[in-house]
Amino acid sequence: MRIPSVWLLAGGVLLSSASLLAAGPATSAPLSAAEANQLVQRVANAPRLVSYQGVYVHQYGDRFETVRVVHIADGDKDIERRETLDGPPLELMRDGDRVGLFLPDEAYPTSIDRRMMSKLFPRAWPEQAQQLLSGYVVRRTGHARVAGVATDIYEFEPRDRFRFPHRYWIHPETGLMLKSMMLGVRSEPIELFTFSQIQIGGNIDRKLLKPSHPLRTVPLENGDGDALRVQDPEWEVHAMPPGFRLVKAKRSMWGKGRPVTHHLYSDGLVTVSVFIEPKQRSMAPSLSQQGGMSFFSRPLGNYVLTVVGEVPAEAVQLISNAYVLRETDTAQ
Image: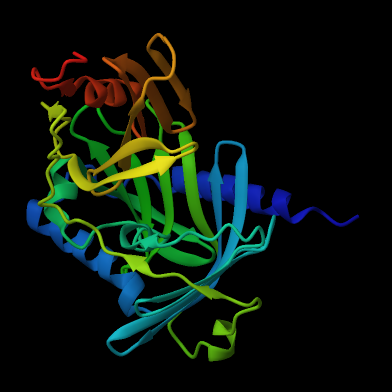
């Protein structure tokens, strides 16, 4: 009888977790500021500077996705191709700043946020370490193999109750991230990325970059940068959780011409979105969680604020409560 590949992959995750427990901690002392900064810079740069190809698994709640990625560092630019291996066929090709997509449902976006492209596994950390390290204490806790490759394990422990712990498996020779896990408040895994096959360096066949489907070019949308501030005549934003910065503010039309304002915040590892839209009906505040995502909606004047993010419930509530209508607004 043929064993389903999904069972084998899930078994690999369990075996990897068992090997982590067997390895034990290498040191419990936090990295110094200089050591942590050097680690973040190295791991952030590795996916751009190192050639690699392999297959990784993304597990989030009850969702399970397998992706093949081929990346070739080519001088001043890098070339990358990704394709899903289960479910609907999806494909992405990036050559420097040129991005091509294949989506079977033809629902192509008008543009792609540059930040989204920079967060595709194993591109998980920002190049600027200061913001990230302000929210987490970093410890090296052990060693384990991922897809047959030796790695060092690092724990990112939150400095406050407004974010989740994270664990990373890093290839010591190149700094390439081979596994990433977000943990819940009880240290339970809530999101996992892990390579099941990986080749790092060596002679990677460029034929693997050839698309399997016709691709449509989609322009990259530049971010607004860390210096962005909310400047809205109707809203004031007071105290936010420490370390979270506004990285994008955009107003668009959804549904039947309904204006929706979107503010995107990040602490360097995770993101939180604030959506502001006109209130259509009376409603009570609502709080829910799904895996590592927290959702909080509440009415405020003639609007509804919805906060969604990869953070504990207390964080989305705090962010929502940071928004207040200006006193000059008649809807207050």
